[in-house]
Length: 297
Length: 339
Ligand SMILES: Cc1ncc(C[n+]2csc(CCOP(=O)(O)OP(=O)(O)O)c2C)c(N)n1
Ligand SMILES: [Mg+2]
Image (cartoon, rainbow over the protein chains, first blue to last red):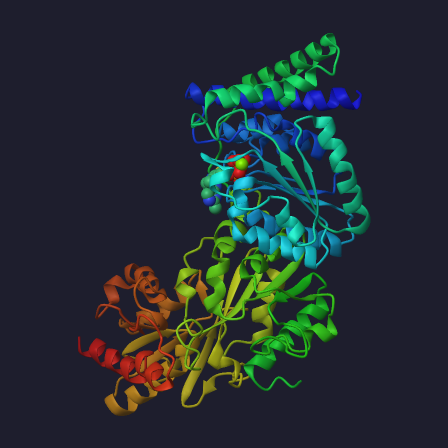
């Protein structure tokens, strides 16, 4: 499969997965909460495409796309959200607390940035060549520990990629009400090479990240990638207070639909159908599966 | 450096363990030579292990946060938090990160991070550098909390946290204790006391003036109140013919309940003595956990001695007035036996 097809397969899979979740929540078939990445899939797919088996990822509350793009573990994640024993964390972690191999997510904003810096230090001492990537949102730039962590990463020249997914909102709060100054000026103040991109095109994300990963793998110094993107879905489930006209206008730049146009219609249709069938089969299988046991942890 | 004082023994233990295992990193503020840490615990380490002793900015949250990431990826970091009072800045990293990773993924993810920090007053450091804050940490699930004491063999104590365990651990080092002589070499007696140790690597010391028999009450303490409890026990016997056994805890969380129960069963009277503030204290939980186990044998309601001042004054005279004293302990002991 060529890269365009691979990217589209992942984009469409994540979108279908997230849409399925929102449906299930609205029908009352899933409980708890979730934060879907609808509209931000390009970052997940474009960035994880640079990662190798040794690399480490720390992600936040909005982690499904990152997790799926990296691991392709649809069944493990869905089972986790359904509270099944086969869930990747046996039903204990849920939507925001996932771990598999080098992937860790945590629902507390900001703290993972420090953990990522420490992980990068460990990988550096092991000479593993691994790059540690940490995903954070623009709202999380309000947490002080982010700056402690950036300072340390720069000071100790650690191979961390800070990915700031700037979608213009922190829950209900627009950026203008919570952030002074420039986003990119923050990492740059620590001497961290920072690249900004205002594009929802996965190829553009992939291309923009190429020099960042190349640089990280050659000199081991931290880099920052600021992605100006937009969340097309609600913050979590039904909690959207934004102007519907604003959201509607942003749909023209839907990263999944736009990317689909890069493929011949029959190829795209085939990929969509395969993803749909895969999801349907997993859902059917999991609906029969046992609920999570209480023997963990 | 000869291991003359407790601080030297801690230093020697870190030295030995770092030489033995390359996964151990020391990370904290001002830990490099020639300074060697605010209390000199890390002196010499950076000269001997320059790659593995990391001095940091004044960033307690990221000290613990980075150490947590290091631990998740196979290292065994030891954080030094310069004063225990500064642990508040790292609280979220302890509560929602270091202790959560091993638990919340239901995969037994190892996170072997050790945090060492000095606590306690009587050095005139004032309100924000003298507190005993362990009570805010002993209730965190998944965090092992221990307190070093002079009867404790030092090297095994640190070995257990740094090398044997797979989860996060918090070590409380009392500030006054750094400058005292170790008593780990003593086998079965100290001063006029007979001495027993309970446990393997982290031990509880039990001391008695009457051969572990015929005691009227049990004093339970740890850290900076240990010496005061021993003085009080002696004075109580001489002046009031009250005999007490004294338990000096090494394990704060989880509590060594069997050891405590056995010691208190003999007496039926329990007095818990701590230097931190009273409400919602370490003593509250010890009493709560022990009471049901001792219920039928209790001769009086378990009592507590703790710091009554809401803030510790700077002046030495005032500090002495407001920190729990031998007289405070004696008064409670007398009240318990006459109750
Ligand atoms: C420490 C902390 N404070 C508050 C929250 C609640 N919360 C969850 S997501 C969120 C908004 C985060 O905004 P941003 O970082 O921009 O990420 P986005 O949701 O836009 O992807 C908030 C306030 C939290 N999870 N953790
Ligand atoms: Mg945001």
